[in-house]
Structure formats: C-alpha cells, structure tokens
Image (cartoon, rainbow, N blue to C red; front, top):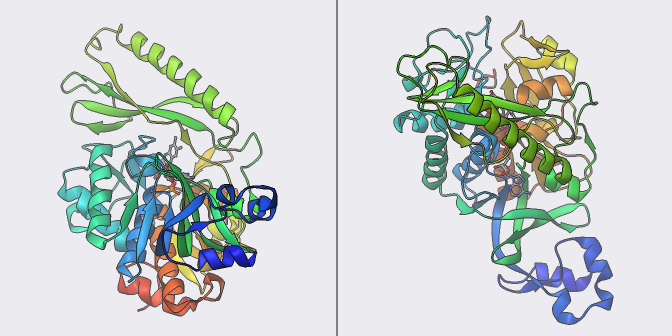
Length: 443
Ligand SMILES: Cc1cc2nc3c(=O)[nH]c(=O)nc-3n(C[C@H](O)[C@H](O)[C@H](O)COP(=O)(O)OP(=O)(O)OC[C@H]3O[C@@H](n4cnc5c(N)ncnc54)[C@H](O)[C@@H]3O)c2cc1C
C-alpha cells in the first residue's frame, strides 16, 4: 500500500481515497489526481456487515448488541435475503426434523428474531413439514417456521432498530478495501455513486462469499454439475378457494400459498446464466399458472407474486482455517471451538433427504475465519464446509446461528483490536452463551 493511500485511509470522514482495491491504486500513476481520488470514505464503523439475509441480519444485531458501532449494507431495498427476496418462506433447522429432536439447536438472537415475527403475526398457518408440538410463542421452536415474507422484512428492521444497527440499503458492495491481506472496509455502488466505508472488521454475509473471493480468499464449490444444488423460482398463488386441500405442500398464508416453482441449473454467479434462468423460469411459471386456472374449482387462483429473483442454492464456499467435513456432519462431531450447531438434514445427499441420527453437528469458529485474509469473518452459506454439511448449515435457522457467532466474533475482534484468527474462542463462547446461544457447553 502506498503512503498516499495509508494517509488517506487514516484521515477523517469525507476525505477521498485513491481507490477501493489495491491493484487499482498501483495502476493509478497514469491517471489524473481527481480520477485517482474518486472514492470518498463516507463513513467508518467498527463492524460492517455486507448482505442483509437471515445470517447478515442476525450478525449485525449480534455485533451491535455486543457493543460495536455496526452498519449493515444490502443491495435490495429490504432485508431478509433469500427468505424474502427469494420467497423461501420457511426457516428450517431450529432442531432436528426427526427424532432425536429434543434439543433446540438454534436459540439466542435468532430466537429473539422469531419472537418478533410471532409478535407481528407473521408465522404461517401451515408449512410442508410435519413436526411435533411446540409452543412457538414461548420460544420453543419446532423444526420449521413458515412465515409471511412482508412480516419478515419488518421483523428484521425492528430487530436492527432495537439493537442500534445503521442501515444502508440500495447499495451493492462491489469489493473490499484492502491493505495487503487486511480488509479495511468496503466499496459500495449506489445511486449516490461509488463510495467507501471503512471498518475494523467486515463480515461477509453475501451468501456467495463475494467479499472474501474478491479479497483473494481461496474457495471451494459449487459442487460438480450432477451434485450441485440447483436454483428455483418461488412464487405465491392468491385467490385460493376456502377450505381447499388442493394446495397443500406449500406455505399457507391465509388465502395465499407460497410454492416452489421451476428449477434451473448452471452457475449461480454467471450473470448470463442468471438472466437466462430468470427469463425462462418466469415465462414457464406464467404458463403453468394459466393452465392451473383452467382446472375445475381453481378458476379463482392467480399468480399473486413471483420472487424478486430466482433462488440460488449453491455457489462458493470460502476455505477457512477448518473445513467441516461430511463425516463431521454424519458423526455429529463436537469441536472445542464450537460456535453454532446445525441439526438440519442434508436435503439432497446423493439424491435423498439425509436425517442425522444425532442432535446436530458443531460448527467450529475456525470455519468462519477465511484463509489468507485478515479482518474478515464469514457467515451464512459461504462458510468453510464440504458440500454435505453445507446442505445442512445453509438452511436459514443454522445460518442465523452462525450469524450470531460471526457478529459476536467481529465485535470482540474490533473492540480488542485483535485479528479474528487470533481471537480467544473461550471469550467468544462466553459472550454467545450470555446471549442465550445453544453451544452444548456449560456457561
Ligand atoms: C430455492 C431455495 C430453496 C430453499 N429452501 C430452504 C428452506 O426451505 N428452508 C431454509 O431454511 N432454507 C432454504 N434454502 C436455503 C436458504 O434460503 C439460504 O441458504 C439462506 O438464505 C442463506 O442465508 P444467507 O444470509 O447466507 O444468504 P442470503 O439469504 O442469500 O442473503 C444474502 C444477502 O446479501 C445480499 N447481497 C448479496 N451480495 C451482495 C452484495 N455484493 N452487496 C450487497 N448485498 C449483497 C443479498 O441481496 C441478500 O439479501 C433454500 C434456498 C433456495 C435457493
């Protein structure tokens, strides 16, 4: 890093930086002064969370609750990630779907978030998963919570407001600011132009590991063609006839039902493939619903809503200090540095839904710490695991539990000026337990 950039990065808000990305700084010689100093640092936070999906929202809430100034940045004008934008409106994996399912493996801030969803009346009447009886209103959560996507957006906003998290919507995080291997903030693009936001610690909650990958962290996945989990376009059917049993298998919201729509393959990071997926799936879905409306008794049904974007299940998994293996998941391995537990089945393990014969497998802190890159913590579906455990932990309840851990870790690292890699995991576990997380450890 040049002295000029160091000087700018260290100065007050509102002063311009040369560029967001180191390599661009190196190439700046040929450009004019104003061209080089085009990206202003507009804000500085202890923790910046890139991505406002289920994991990012909980991570931001956890970082703020743990005492750091925290900003969450999201490309859409609302929160909730694939749960709302993708209309994937059932949070799976608060406990094992089948016995043994005595232990609720996801508690803490994710449970506080669900309490807010319940308070708003945002839990669905029905979802596709049979389950044993639980008192959701009292925080005793079943395997799955079906929900109203609009209520989930509001519950996310309410949680972040309560915890004091600052928000920046309509903003694409296009890359990290780097000082060698250290992430010093992020570059965002929005209607306000290109801006930089400085941070002590950045959490990559983009789902795709965009920040980690662009910082140069090594990554795995997606799995080979045959095993890769595909994309699906979710939708809502409205105008369901009263008491109709014809629309079971979806997530029931009064007279509407959320359904799984057409699937699509290929690379979920390739913009041309994504465009093709959106166009073909939408046209197909429209035709499907028009056909359905011609069936006797279904004339009142209409296409109420299509997801903002097709749901992408699997892209990058960033390589961390430890990669959770398929055997770890199947054996229910315990790790001394556990920071979350995933009990969700592996939904397409060699083509079948694989249920664990245990209460869950540990997610170790090391799988949240990317190799090679400093001041960056991973969360959500891009954490370091093989494809089997990924299938389980990517579900939204465990992804929220991981968010809780990443937010607490980022806060401890920022407040103590410690590299996430060197964090005292016992202190992190103590903080998580004080916020009611389930780690299967004694406080
Ligand atoms: C079709 C489908 C069905 C599924 N079924 C279920 C199910 O039934 N139950 C279940 O629990 N899980 C299910 N999942 C999995 C689950 O939805 C995801 O794995 C989960 O949402 C991951 O959470 P996340 O917070 O890591 O990422 P996401 O939910 O993807 O959130 C990432 C957020 O970051 C934002 N973002 C991304 N990149 C940037 C950027 N560069 N700048 C700014 N913002 C950015 C996105 O807009 C998004 O809001 C399903 C997934 C799919 C696709």
